[in-house]
Length: 176
Ligand code: ATP
Ligand code: MG
Image 1: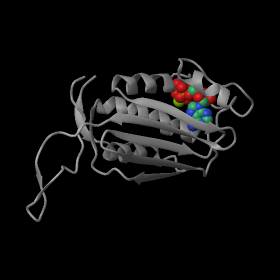
Image 2 (image 1 turned 90 degrees about the horizontal axis):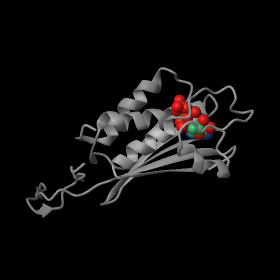
Image 3 (image 1 turned 135 degrees about the vertical axis):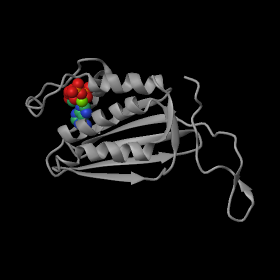
């Protein structure tokens, strides 16, 4: 892992651009955590986003909305990728983070994949001390959430009035 500090919203915008050419889904990005900086491996987090957005597109009908949202509190950043696709039966959700686990039924038989994406996503997020989980209901769509921890970096920030306030940007501890 190559640790770096970067704004996640920029990485999301960059990743979404890579899917634009397909143009059969609307990808909506709701950014409620602008300028939040995480410490992590930018390439690996990009890989997580590629698989989750790719899954959202792959398992939902043309023209479906894929909504990516971002929010944070003092301790963590949460990114959610929501689709309006075929969904996942509740009993299958826990096994999908294991390697080569796919769901084989009629609505999925023509959709390709090796079943490695979510296992890799979980491995990467766990390496960053984060968490990843799935909310889904069959026929109603799926939302995958991942959280990355944030730690405020002690630094002074002076606003335009010249008074001190807490820094506007949260930084993750760089100790991996
Ligand atoms: P790969 O990512 O290796 O190309 P894959 O997409 O099949 O293959 P995963 O990303 O690990 O593998 O997903 C595992 C399985 O979970 C998928 O085959 C699919 O059945 C189900 N799944 C994942 N994301 C979604 C989603 N957004 N909607 C519905 N089903 C999903
Ligand atoms: Mg996948």
